[in-house]
Each structure stands twice: as structure tokens, then as C-alpha cells.
Length: 194
Length: 194
DNA sequence: GTGCACATGTAATGTGTTACATGATTAT
DNA sequence: ATAATCATGTAACACATTACATGTGCAC
Image (cartoon, rainbow over all chains, first blue to last red; front, top):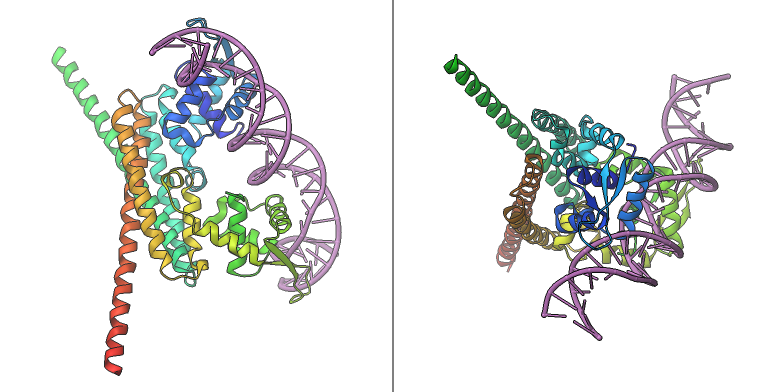
């Protein structure tokens, strides 16, 4: 990982639409992305870091009379963002960086490929299933003498991962069906026209 | 919060049983507590910090011939740990610090009060229900123009919190029933003996 | 003219991560 | 002997948080 999660989040937000530091702060405070910092002491230095790396460029914004420094992505920033978005989803990410996986899901549309959402959901489903199996095995072998609270916490975790796996796989299949539907519809139209 | 999550985790592990830095590292690598660091550069400094604060004391351990510095909690450390374990569970913790809530659940037995587990689970249930409601309301009002991936991520989150809320409330009720059962059983025995 | 929202920053601090570093004991 | 495991540390770096600090434009 070449940048911090916050930095990738900012990159994605800026790619989604041109943003100033203040805009970004507001988005982070007002949406469930809030667990990323949201304080000026966190965002402004992060912006300068990714600017120094050449991933964003400031553009003076004179739409209003207020002082305002907006940013947009450079080609380098754009390709770095795409690299991050299209990273494979593995067990490690599901287990320890689920928030980032969900962030990548949220910004999947920035890849510009309508099919990638279905693929990404399927990857989440597979990796989560694998991790749930690993967790189940851990619970089976290692928790005989655990206190009640610890067993409960582990079972809660297992249940969560299992339900997440089902959900992701299911949503992926839904998209597959829709695509199939759209495709056969298009074929019908073609046949009709010919 | 007067100490870092890692520090509280270490405190709890040491209270559970006397540990050296190496023991702690092994526990962190081998259990799902793994997302707490696990590297020596993280654990040894943390140990020195809580030692400086007077929460743990090192005890030379000559059980084996290896060099080994084990720790145990001081009375101050013990009461700080209990303070942390018995903090109220609120929406903010559910939303942004769920891992810590689960850690506190895992070590609830260190409070020494068998009833506290049920109470803690009920508190998780209530706070999670509240947060799920807030998230649902956010989704209802704010996501009309969100990209598909973002909506999916939010719905996944909502589903997770809803299922967690149900689970916690249900487990709490199970414990309540068991307690009820145990109590009436004890009453029966008393009656029989008299 | 005063208070609020807009808007951007700096400094101090703590902490986690990575990489580097060392050495002892045990098992093969 | 030598590799693996036990065992403990340091240094450099990046990052987030908190608190502090400053100034502008708009609405009332």
C-alpha cells in the first residue's frame, strides 16, 4: 500500500467531483465515512502529501468570492486510484481492513467499467467465505477454555462474516441476472429490427 | 480514553494471566486479536508506557533458563482496566470502535461479576439498534444520487448492524433465562431441603 | 456589528509500522 | 554445527488527533 487509507479516500472523493479541503471535511463529517479523521489537522496535511506526490493539483476556484482551493486528480493520481480500486480482495483485507474494502466498493464506479462491480462483489463473497471458514476452524480448535464473553465475541464475528459472504455473493448474482436480462433484451431488439 | 486500544488489550491479557512481551506477541499473532499490531516495535514500547504509568509491574521469571520478563497488573492497573471494561456502550463506539467493544466483551469476565455479561450484551443490543436506525435514516434521505457501489456498501453495513443488534439482544435474553432457571432451581433445592 | 459558517492552516504529542539489530537456548 | 525458536529491544518514519490560530463573507 503506497498511501494511507485516508489518502485513497480523499483521492476517490476528489475524482468523484472537484473538492476543496473544506468540502472533504464536510463529506467526512456528514457521511458514514466519518471514521476517517475529519479534522483539519488530518486533511490538509494529507492533501499536501498527495499533492507533493503529484497525484492532485490545486485549481483556483473563483466561483464564489470566498477564498477556496479546490483540487482535481492528475493523470498519475487517476491511475494510482484505479490501481487501488482494482486490487484483489483477499482474506487479509476482509479480516483486518474491511472498511477499506467497503470504501473501494463504494467508489467502484470510478473504474468506469460497469462489469467490475459484479466482479468485485463476487471477490468479496469468495474471500469472506474463506475467512469465515478459517474463523470457524479457529473457534472449533482453540476456544474450549475461553471465557464466555470471548466465545460470544468470536461467534458474533463469525456470524457477521457468514452473512456478509452470503450477501455479497447474492448481490453479485443479482447483477449477473440483470446483465443477462439486459443482454437477451438487446438481442430481442436486434432480431426484431433485422 | 486514557490509554490506546492496544494498551488496554495488553492490560486485559496480562490480567487474564501473567505474560511476557513475547507471550503477548504470540497471542496477538495467533488469535483474531491479530489486528492489534503484533510487532515488537509496537508491543515493547506499549509495555514500557503502561509500566511507567504504574499499571503493570515486571516480575523476573526464572521458571525456564531463558531470559524472560513477565508482567502482572498493579492495583492501579486493575482498577483502570475495570473502568475501561465497564464504560457505557454508546452509538459512537458501535459505529466507529466496534472492535474495542468486542474486545471488552471478550474480557468481561475480568470484572468478576457474572451478571455483567448479560448487561453488557443488552447494552450492545440497544446501542446497535439505535445506530442501525440512524444509518437507515441516512440511507433513506441522503443516497438518492449515490453510485450503485456506495448504496451497496451502506446496505451491507445496515444489514450487519441489524443482525448484530438482534444477536446481542437475543444472547442477553438467553442469559437472562438461564439465570432465571438457575434461580428457580436453587429455590427448589432450598424448598426441598427445608 | 455581531455571530455563524466558510476556509485554511500549524504545533505538539502519541502511537503504530517497518526495518534493523542482538543474543540465548533448544532441537536436530 | 546449525537452524529454529525464544526473547527483547532501537531508530526512522508516517500518520492521526488535539488544540491552537487566523481570517473572510454573509445574514440578521
